[in-house]
Length: 314
Image 1: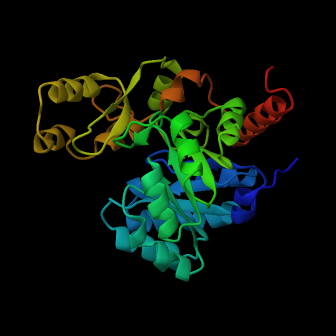
Image 2 (image 1 turned 135 degrees about the vertical axis):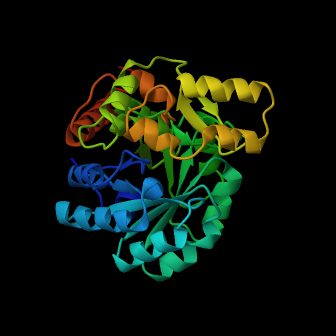
């Protein structure tokens, strides 16, 4: 049965489940599959050249007649071109992250686009609300990819953000099951944004080596790293060990950037180099045990959620 609250009404979706816009994982195939299954699929534009983004948007329009959106990290180059393509292609929903929401929210909303900003603190959530955002994603320390320097966990962050803003709150970080969704919603969220679980979907464009590494990961196999550059949660591998050792020795920001180099995330997550690639993934990878079609993941999430709702102590 479809579920109704402010988020499902805002995005015109059946279930309060948002698939995170992940670099090298969430192209048009994954976004359209999630949207077709009743959630909100997001194209991750952070790893795309402008014309590649346009192609993914156009293919997503063909693959689904449901709502979908684009995630745009504001720190990436070509941001102006990305936003113009989004406007030209009449995308209806944009999730922004890693930057100041004031920069683009008014421009996008003037074009009739719904805007959501990803935050790591209640202070930034209030700034997003003041900038005119329609909702915020409260992303806890457990999340993969770019992360907050504050290291606030989801269970602390969600109620803090809920108490600070009037707009709807979407919980992210450490959520891969319906029970975890329910827990986040009890704390004040009106939806869950889920990334890591969808990395291990058939439609995710991430390399099979990366998906296999995620399935084999255990508790403690990820760690927040690169704090002097942009904090990011990584799966531990040879590259991580080099970065971790450099951080322990007090390497400067410039030295860390040199170690990171260019194309490191593509090398790992998209091309499958499990030793020297940058492997961005959340702590909840330890709970992910299989690769499934996105539609089946959606089905399982909602079944777990409704079962937990009817029997929360079960």
